[in-house]
Amino acid sequence: MFFLIIGLLLLLAGFAINTPALTFSRYSRPVKLTGFVLLILGFLTAAVRQIDAGQVGVISLFGNVSDRALSSGLNFVNPLANVTEFDTKTQNYTMSATNDEGQKVGDDAIRVLTADGLEVVIDLTVLYRVIPADAPRIYQEIGTDYMDKIVRPITRTRIRDNAVYYDAVALYSTRRDEFQGRIYKTIESDFRKRGLLLEQLLIRNIDLPASVKKTIESKINAEQDAQKMQFVLAKERQEAERKRVEAQGIADYQRILSTGLSDRQLQYEQIKAQRELAASPNAKIVIMGGRGTMPLILNEK
Image 1 (spheres, rainbow, N blue to C red):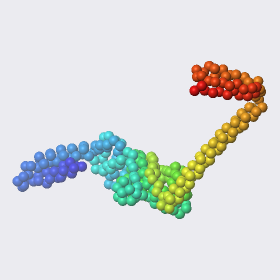
Image 2 (cartoon, one colour):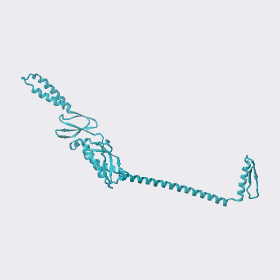
Image 3 (cartoon, rainbow, N blue to C red):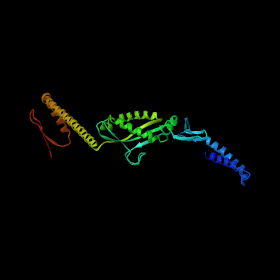
Image 4 (cartoon, helix red, strand yellow):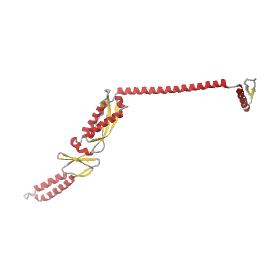
C-alpha cells in the first residue's frame, strides 16, 4: 500500500510539472516513469498477502467484510482491501487471586455464592481457540477484542449461575468434577455460538471461607480419631481371641492329662527319662523309691 500511494503521488506530480513554462518540466517524464513503476510494484505487493501458520486473515473493503477467511500461506486479494489476522492457535485466559498470574493485574478470581449462602473464591483457566471459518463473523460482530467481550464475561457469568446448585463443601470436595463438567457444557455452547471453540476448563483452586475450613478440619480430625479407635478395638479383639484360644488349649491339655494317662504310660515315661540320664556324660546318683514313686536324682558334685 505504501508503494501504491507513493507511485500515485509521483505519477500525479509528473503530469503536474509537464508544462513547458516550468524550468523543471524536463523531469516530468522520469517522475512519471518512476511513479508508474512504483504504482505497479505497490499493486503487486498489495495484491499478495502472507498469512503465517496458525493464523487466518479476514478481508474488509470499504466496510464490507468478506465471508471467506484467508488460510496460511500466500493469498491474492484486492490491493485496496484491508486484511486483519486472527490467531487460531490455542489461547488461555486465567482468572486468579494471585497477583500478576492472570491476564488482569491484581486479584481477578471469581467470587460465587453457593447454595448454602457462602462465598467461595474460584481460580480458573480457560483454554480455547478461534474457529477459522468463523473468523469473518467474529470480526464483523465482535471485533478483535473477543477475549474481553466474550471469553471473560461469559465464563464468569456461567460459573456464578451454576455454583448456586452446590453447597460449599460439596463444591470443594465430592462434587467438584461434576461442577466442572456442568460449567464446561454451558460455556462450550455459548462459545460455539460466538465462533470460539472451548478446549478445556481447568478449576485451579477453590478457596472456602475460614469458618468452613475450620469445620472441615474438625470433621477430618474426628474421622481420623474414629478410625484410630476402630483400629485399637480391632487389635484388642484379636488379642482377646488369642488369649481365649490359648486358655482353651491349656484346658484341653489338662483334661487330656487327667483322663488319658495310665499307670503303664507314666512308668514308660520314667524309663525314658532314666535312659536319658544314664546316657548323659555327667555323673549322677539316682535313688529309686518304691512302686509309684518318682526317683530322686542327685548330682555327684
